[in-house]
Length: 247
Image (cartoon, rainbow, N blue to C red; front, top):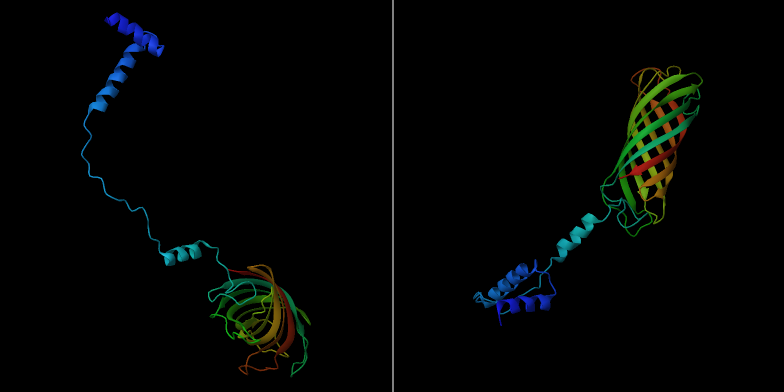
């Protein structure tokens, strides 16, 4: 067969134009040359182990790290996690009581900002008083509006016990002692510096897992502990409505 006949046969075989034939010849020749090359003598492993081991403990820890954190130890209402913290904003009023030596009723309006931190894991497991102890630090301020207008500001550390009910309703008991600066004077108080004592109870309702409304009532007493005269003291019952964010 002549070269011309080969040329025409390839064109008929591939149905190509004359311009594409050189490219086709080059590709066919390259592929044929590649098939004639000796295969490289590479060692082939008898078996390949594609299995891998996993560390269950590490995977469990990874899941815990990726899971959203909660303020609860075992679910909502089952007691707070030991490192749970909170910020509370409250507002309310004090109804003054002319008792225990106090001569006047001192009616007050106030607001407060409180930081809280749980003191450990849930205590009292298996008992009705199961719950979480908490340290709280309250900064408060406001004004006396009756019998006259006076200012006050104070700082009080508290200890609170939050009962674990297993529901979104968390009752608590609370007590604190701190210091107060005030312009309220005689006949019941003697100067700017006074101590404050307070104790009360209340309840929190959790709107979300980490957001709660609170309602509480406290008995409050202010006096200077005999440092100055007069030292009859201020007594009253305080009601507060608050909003607490836990983290």
